[in-house]
Structure formats: structure tokens, C-alpha cells
Length: 250
Image 1 (cartoon, rainbow, N blue to C red):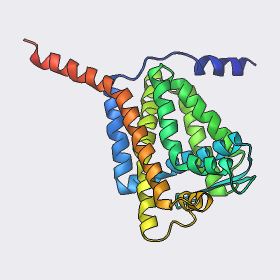
Image 2: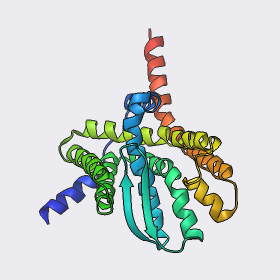
Image 3: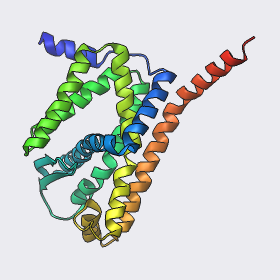
């Protein structure tokens, strides 16, 4: 009980929002992690975890029975649930994957600006722990366990400054990375290789073209990035004003 009380105390403790310097540094780091081809491969695994987590949460909320989650070494993933093969629940589950990173990123922005960077890390740990219960392949289990262990260690032993910096980086990473898998999906669609994708399944369920669903994924992912950046940018504006004041001081 004492341990749970301590975890709760830490998770709900207030921390200062990230400084403008941390916001800017995290944004630049996230951009490099997404743009650089070699770094993107590692980053995409985190995006895939979020993607499959989005499917899983939507499936549970829609009343479907979650059966398995897999994360593969080629950065692809799969979430299997039992329920009606059509209908709003299935549509919601399919929609939630590509929209997951942007939605989680926006939620992370809210927690950051409210001074709950540590609470964000504990929430991530909790969600990853719940996801572990449904992982059904060894690679996926090891990767999710490793990420959960790393976030848990940071949440328990890291300094407040480090926790805020990592939480800010994670937030930017989800926002910046969200549109890129959609671009990759669009390329597969043009090559005729997206039939089994979320967009392809939505096309069969709704009789609306897969290209339209890819457009929806892309539009909402970019919108999530724009809104998240708009909320975080005031901190960068404050930094610019501070620098301007220093440069123009007599």
C-alpha cells in the first residue's frame, strides 16, 4: 500500500511546464528522429506501438473482445479483436490506428502544459503494462517490455528536469511522426499494395474508396500536429522575446 501511495503521489505531483529551450530542443530532436532514415526505423517501432494501442483501446471501447496484439521486427503490427465483422465498432477500431499517435500526442500536450510531465510518463507506463497482457509474439513482448521498463525507470529515478525533457520529446515525437506512416500508406496504395491495410478494410466496410480514408488519416494527423504545435509554440515565442531582449539590451 505504501508503494502504491508513493506512485500515486508522484504521478499526481505538479511539475513546471517545459521551458522554451526544452520545447525547442525536443522539437528539433523529434524532427531528426523522424526525418533521418536510420533513426526513423527505430522511431517507427514506437509509432507502431501507439498505432496498435489505438486499435486496442478503440476495440475495447466499442465493446469488442481484444484477442491479440503483435508488433513485428519490420515495424509492422497487427491487432485482432472478436466481434461483429462490420458496423460502427469495427470502423472505429480501424480508424483509431493511424489517428492514434496524433490523438495521444495532443493528450500529452495537455498534460505537459498542465504541469503533469511525470503523470504523463506514469500513464504511458500503465498503458504499456496493459498492452503487454495482450502481446502474442516474442519480438513485440520484448520491445514493449523494454520501453515500459525504460519509462518506469525514468519515472522513478530520473530528475524532474530529465523527466520533463523526455516527456516533451515523446510528445513532439508522436505529433511529428503521425503523418509519416500515412504518407507511406499512400505510396503503398498507389502501388496497389494497400488492400489489407486499415484504409483497404475501411473501403470494403463503407464502400468509400481507400484513397478517401487515407486522405482522412493524413488530414487529421496534420491537424493534430498543427494544433499541438500551436499550443506549444507560445513557449517558443517567449524564448524569442527573451533572446531579443538580451540582444537589444544596452
